[in-house]
Image (cartoon, rainbow, N blue to C red; front, side, top):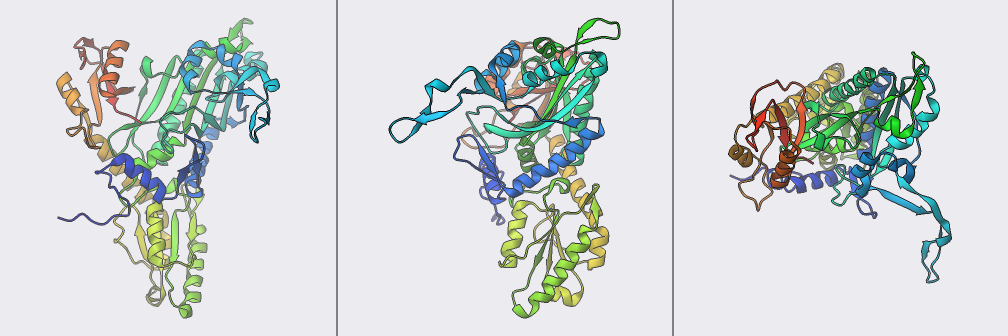
Length: 508
């Protein structure tokens, strides 16, 4: 039986990693730059990030946070104050040692030896240390707390095996940094922000996620606890889609964030940090995309509706374009998710079929085609990206406008249901080492074969076992789920006693 013709080659089931790269290219989202490990985010890809920013920023501000900005450069001495933190990032840090260039005498340039910095600067891998130094100046009394700040920024973590959106040397993110009077307040903040991420994943990205705590081996360097949301994508691997860290007083002590308490005693603040990045774009592509390209959840689509005029003959063009513009204006007056609906009118001098395929590959949720016959009938040709590209409905303009918000929500709900079904179908409980190894081992090791999924299995809570599993199978503990019940059992790897199951998976 012949396979259906698709826009993307190879298909997901043939070579998922290569499929992903081809989808990014076909959708015109991003491309590799001339700087190894860095990417150029193109307008459609950046539009997705802007929509994510708007959604998250609104959620952050609704919980009392404000935006600020802190330096890109961090003095080496600031990093050195937090030994565990530095060790976790040391191999990924980019270091600035000079502040100017000079001619090398051969027509090129070189660092001027006389411009060597007295103290090297680290290009921001994360901002706990530089923000901690700032907070130490701001905080004197318990009355100065809490500090609830977020920044939208870029960071650099030198990446040896880059992949666009998923792992790049430079990427965009937000990082929240808060300081509190008490441990309980900081823990509450950590849990609250994880809840914000879970809400955003479900209500904006149509992603069902597991929530839980990281094991000590997977914890953010220097944190007391790291909480996370974990999503499954279509090759059944996990992606860490957001983290929230309770830092205790570790960074406050290193940075000197102290205050006079209500009891008139000198105390260190309790701090948190939390963040998500442009990795979310890659997550959405791999969770929802198909063999024709990207499928975007409506709330993060740069354009939620594209109107494609079909007017090959000059004598009908003006009437078709006028009808398209009138429809676009009426649609923009509608709202979905608290925002005006975003409409693109594609008036490029290209064939309608070519334009439609471009928008299919980009993942725009709804396509509307209007041609002379549609004007005669008083209807529109409407296609939803969550359905087959040949499947269309033919409502009147009034019917389409009246139902557009409901249609966009239906698309979101369909994507969430589809992703949930995939996750649930490939989340299993495993009891034996043999079954565990078989679950995470492809039957054909010479082929990029989709296998595995999420395994809920007992773990003896030892770092030794965690490391052995990672080295043997490239499988890690994604989280200790919050809903994991106390359940006596035997570790799936060592056979030693275990108190509960944890979530294992291969991951990006």
